[in-house]
Structure formats: C-alpha cells, structure tokens
Length: 472
Image (cartoon, rainbow, N blue to C red; front, top):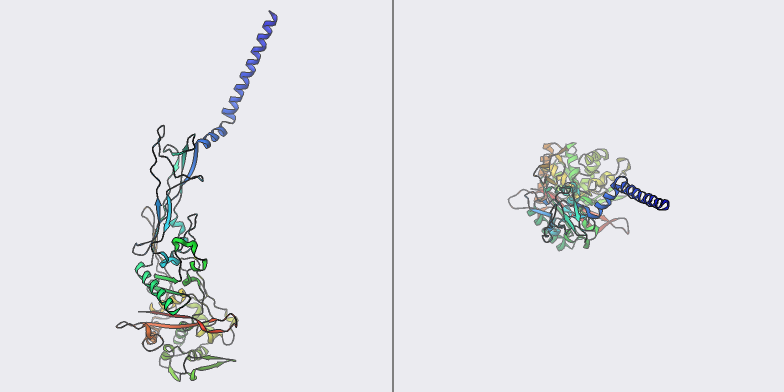
C-alpha cells in the first residue's frame, strides 16, 4: 500500500513537472518571445512592397509630349475570398516592388535628345532635363503590405497598412517642338552637305532668355540609349568649349564704341592684310586698304580689329569680356554646362589682347555667345537663359515657373542700337550676305575659329569652327 502511494506521488510529481515545463515554455513563447514569433509569422505570411510612383512627363511649351512613361498593366487577377478580400498582386516581383511595368518613351527620338536626356535602369534621370528635374519627375514611391498564402502567392489586402504613391510632376520646357524639329533637320542637312564632323544650333527669345530650340548633330536616340557612346549624349551647346573666332569681335566693337575709341565712320588702315605684333603676324583673308569701323566689322578684318584692340588695351578689354559673362557658366538649368576659359589678366602675354579681340586665345560655349548677341538685341541687357517654362504637380498645383532674370546692363541701349546697325551691314554687304532675307532686316556676324593642330601645336588651316549668330 505504501509502495503504491509512493508511485502515485512520483507520477503526480512528474505530471506537475511536465505541466510546469509546458506552462513555462508557453510563457516564453507567448510573452518573452511572443513579439519575435509574431514577427516571424508575419514575415512568412506578409511582405512589404514598394508602390512605384508614375514618372511625370516632359512637354514642350505648348504641351506637346517630349518624354513620357507608358505603363503595361498585367492581366486583371481574380479576387481571393476570405477576410480582407483583395486583388492578387501578380506583378509583385521578388524584390518586393509592386507596380505596372513601365517604359520611358521619347516620341521625337534624336531630335531633342541632348536637351531631354534619358533615364537609367533604376528610373533615375541620367542627363538633360531628366536629370535636372528628376526630383519633380520621379514623384514619391508608396508601399503596401502583401498577404502570402502557403503557395507563396501574394495578394493585396486593403485592410492592411499602405501608403499611396505620389506621382511625378509634369515639366514644361521653353522648347517649341515645331521650331526644334525644323532646327534639327536643317542642321542635320547642313552638316551632311558640308561633310562636317558635327554642328550645333539654337533659337532664343532675346527679350526673355527663353530657349526655343537647342540641337546637336550627331545626336542619339534616348529610346535605345545603350547603342550610343557617352560623347554623343552630351549637350554640346552648353558643354563644348571652343575658340569663337570673329563672332567675338562684337565684344571688341562694343568696348570700342562704349569707351569712345572708335566711331562707326572712323577710318582704319587695313595695312594690305598684314599686322605685325612682336614676332608674329595677324593676317586677313583679303588685303584691305582704308576701311570704316563699320566696314571692318562687316568684312571681318583681323588687321583692323588688332589695331582697335591695341587702342583699347588689355585691362579694359578684359573687363568687358567678364561683364559679358565669359569665364563662368551662364546658369542654365541643365547639367553639364561649362564656363569657357578666360585666362587671368596677369597671365596675358603682350599680344593676348590682340588675339583675344579677334576670338583666339579664349574659349567659350555656344550658349554664352548666344546670350551676348541676345543682349545686343535686348537693348544691352544680359539675361540668364531659361529652359523650363513651368512645372505642374500631379495634383495640378504650380510648383515652379519661368523667371525673367536680367543679370546686368552690359552696354547702354544707345550703344546696343549702334551695334545692331553695324551688324545689319555684315549681312547686307559683308561676310554674312548668305543670311539675308527679303523684306526682313537681319543682323549677325560670321566666325571662323581655327582649331589647334595636335601634331604641330599651331592653328590649322583646314580644321575650323564655322559659325553664324544673328537676329531678325
């Protein structure tokens, strides 16, 4: 009897110990480690997925689409029955991204590629307006919690937390698509007919600084950007430094008129096409005798402008060069802009002021030269270039708009008017006669900037930057 009672006590003790162990384990699981086990359960049955925001479009100033994202939606999934019924997120990938499949499309292909830029595989802008306004275009991604079943299929459950994505804004550029197409095709034809390595062309409103067209040839197709080298993806209108040649004589002429060094009808000796400075000669393409200041600009006489530069002097010429904006970026809201090269005055040689006056020993960008001629057309007011017209948020709010931003009065309105008259003569009777239009006054200036021969270090007789800049 005693033995049986002992056995009962032993069994009871074992049962109590086992029960205590089970209760203790339950306490650990439910209370001590409950949070981690719940988290593990959620991880096995739920997944946080990114909801990709729709990238905004880029349009021209009239609203024509230049770049947009086309979404390809997957087939509509069947609804899943049960608590928190939702639609099957069959387009959620292994990385936890939930969004329609999206392609970036550029309807005009290579025509405006250098201005628009392109995007990378991660959806971020990598050039042009796509990069410059990426923070507006990209929007803000959201997220959602997906439910997973035993077969690892994922479902949207509207009862679970989520954050709705905020779609990107629409960026309206100052570019006019119709003008852009004309400019690009004419530039392409001209480069081909002259067998040139390439070309740049721009159209700008000189009263506002708005850029209506900006083209580069050769170009690239942003719809298939991987096929094109990085060199072709650059916007060379703002990123190429080059010696401007005789288009730069406008700055020298502006200095001479403002400082009362020369007047339009003052006569200058062309010295039969040869001017000696130090041990080197400045030459003209043709031997001239006496020329008026206006004629010297019209015929683009290096010899006459060398003598004018000698009267101006290095310090005064340098001041006007900097006042016109050379040596610093113009401040366009596009990536990759260069500022040109203007050597400090203390680095100028005894002949630098003469060679700079005719557009050598100085490097500029095409945009900088456009702004100078726009300033003369705009009564002497130098403007900051404008490329974006407005930015409209997905909710219709105006986020930004173009600003008319005058930088400074580089010459007086009277001097600007006199320079315009002189530039009209360049087209009427000088080197720019091929730019003349019947019934319309055209002002402008030609330029032939010689390239440096890498083998000799001297200016080449055959390799040049040929340009014309003008206004109507």
